Length: 368
Image (tube, rainbow, N blue to C red; front, side, top):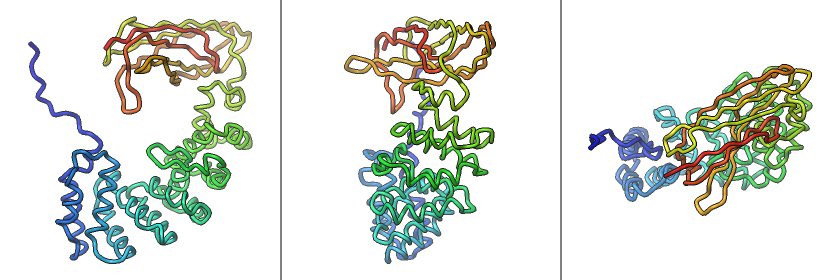
């Protein structure tokens, strides 16, 4: 009989907001504002704590602050701005921004200035979105001014906060329909000295490419892709289009057209369980008379809970293959569940994709 595992379970993200955290915040707020009602704050945050998700716990902290901290909205924000540098965890600081988003929409300019300050401690990318949805023109005019801020966190917020499809964030449907209000922001930040900012620009453009590929490609074609920073953004911005095999995106990044190759793919072992590692081995041989630049991806067809499959494209490699040359590639992927993807038993097909073409396939059986 195997020995019992006495190790503690892995910490969950929601435990960033646990009882100890709330008690620490209560003590800090009491020190900043004598009238702060610690008991009320703890009552509102701790009752029903276990049942709340991470984002619910974050929001509840904001709600409890509003109930326990006396004074007007502006006076409350002044206290929270003093608290921000004292909060030791960047993500936890986001509840300060959530307070502004929840209770500050009747004071737009003041609230956006508060978010500009608070984002330097914990990103306001979620909090700015209700303002963009409710007051799009007024908010966008202010946000566009942030691109010139000396702080990289503020410049990043200009891009990240206006992403149409920000993960975990409110979808900005008006920007999904028409991303043009974001164009001045993206253009202003395409040469930003901060990689942190440029990553956001790339992710923003990748978001837009899912709905408006023509819009993205037209702009990138006017960039100077000989310039390192712009070239890096373009490569990241086109990752969804490359996975889709978009010919125009492939040409833009120098991959050319249809790959002239013979290809084979093997998957091992043939039978796996969760936690096992799938090994993929690809062989690609050039049939061209000249060197080719190739974008190599692989596509896993995952079994759904109720039958059928859905596919996900994974990036494998980018290679230059000389005329007549052959390359062998190996990829290892451990099969584990995520909050965004759960595995189900059955036969899983894997395809090798080169410059958008699916050229070979293999498979494996997943047993649970």
